[in-house]
Image (cartoon, rainbow, N blue to C red):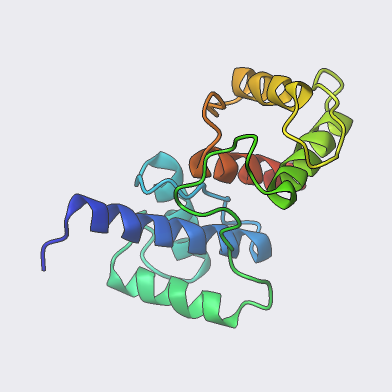
Length: 165
């Protein structure tokens, strides 16, 4: 069966989410960001998973690898990746205070760990200081924060979680 480009991207994104989940319990599997692109990082994570599970370590997610990853994830005692923001999410002044609050907590924690990172108030308000922190984040990472959307959210969450490892 042939897949459309969108279906292929969705399958790759699902694979990446599961590999990310695995990385929390198996430090040999590097965390990978879910972007729907089967790039070098995804291939490395697949290869590490294959090696750790006595599969042919090719870096290609064949059906045996896919099934093993999915079965492995079903046995995890940690929660799987949860989408906090909807697919059409764009941060704005009308965004829920809860989501703004979560973003502020992550930005603030990064600010506590990195002295050059702008400090912001955690208040659930999309402020100029918060915009400045997002601009700074985009300057020091691969995140485009001009339009803070679901991809930006995923990258921020990835950076936030990866810093603990």
